[in-house]
Image (cartoon, rainbow, N blue to C red; front, top):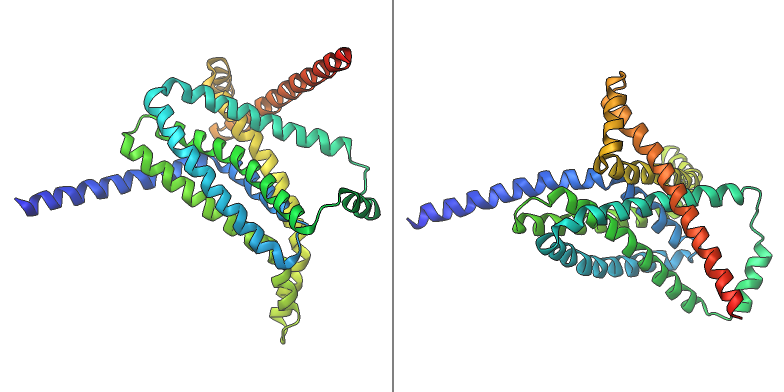
Length: 304
């Protein structure tokens, strides 16, 4: 009897782990856009830190990210358990924010296209701020952790949508695994990216032909990798954010079906619809935010 109970328990555990593995894979796929943006943003946040302090800064932000997940995962589980109807609205709010952030990046890039950084002006601004390097580093860490909180919330909400109909235990384990795997994966890659040029520089001074050549290639490709991550992350933000609206708004979903009936392959129609809707949503939200900012500024000016 005891042996049978043990086998039943082991079978239940194996079934749970199998479900968690499948759901984790699905959740990771759904959050790919946010992960790409999270990776690019965090790598950029560490940029400018002294080489000797890059890994300590990444470690500090990693610990802050774990604290963020410890807050967000229980909150998401409570919402899914007691207010499940909030999952889709929260997911759409997260999608709208993704589209807004992506569109704002494009507008900012286009409006500052001809601008070139002035090193002397930057040094002067730092001196006038009267901040020590330690204070600037702490400020950079705090900013990175705040950014991580927003992106982590989006990742958890998108993952929650995948497991919303599962049992509480499965939901809990899956969200915990996703949160831990994402944090380790993102900041492990961030650490590798920020030290990529240092590793390349070290390899370029080794003996032989292949190792120095590889090192020079790493040094050369490091800035291009950062740019590529930023571009791909922005595109993925529209795909993920727009996809949330396409798959949760009936009118938009029917439009997707029309595109598929017109002969477009399913994945092409989905990507195209998501990209277009993402751009439209981003433009509308940015316009609304800009209008609100202007009205608020006018009221403040009138009050004075």
